[in-house]
Image 1 (cartoon, rainbow, N blue to C red):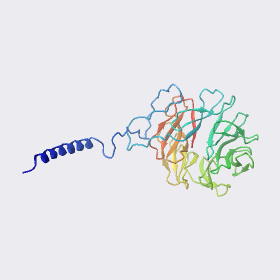
Image 2: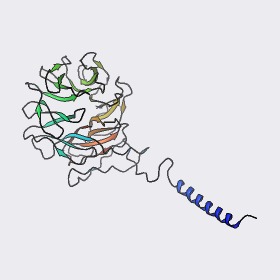
Image 3: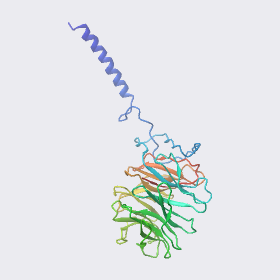
Length: 345
């Protein structure tokens, strides 16, 4: 005859197992306990006006909704550098913030003209940008805290869109000093300025490959703006996109395997990625408003970009998404005073 104590213990075990089975059955398959609500699917994007916080130092709360799979959380490491027109009637100024949009710090205070297109140096100690504070557009650099602002280009043309070489020794940039926009190269101190492209069309927006051997850029030499790749000395220029619409602003991923860019092939500008040879073109955003100026996080897992989706005044804010297009999240709330053109380190 079984021991009475063994019968009692068996009953307790049976009750515990039944309770555990009931708990697992209530949790969706594959989802750990405590999984937060999923973010919305990137297609379509629903514009929902959002109230601005009391100041710019509060990160946005990710929107709620449903998606095929949860997105990775927004990275809270690293720094953004960007431009914003907030409270600056003369033009946009350069700011930094944490990657979650908190802790804004204003770096430039140009009384006349605006400062644009800031880019971190590879070691994060410097920022290159262009400005029309001197009348025409010129390329400047400054320390990461905004100090020691120094002019690198000095001519009667417009010099813009600087891009650091991966070793930090050179800067590629766009200039129309010889009549139309072309790609030029100079040392990081502004010396030895050399022209890399030479044709009757416009070449602009250079971006280096991580190994420093190639430069991606945009050109309208074939009738509309497409993306090209060339060697760092300007040779072997090859077109890698070919559509009737516009492909512009290439951004090379840190591992060298992808190029992000913006295209209006569907009407408004949206963010795409592709391999460096132009294959595997993938649309990351589907929207009825412009999404532009992609730039990669240091580890290549996410992309920061500018979007007009939440602004009724045709301005925009800064957003971050995962490299596959999921997890699109607004991180700045500047009252839609046109905040964007961000770079991430």
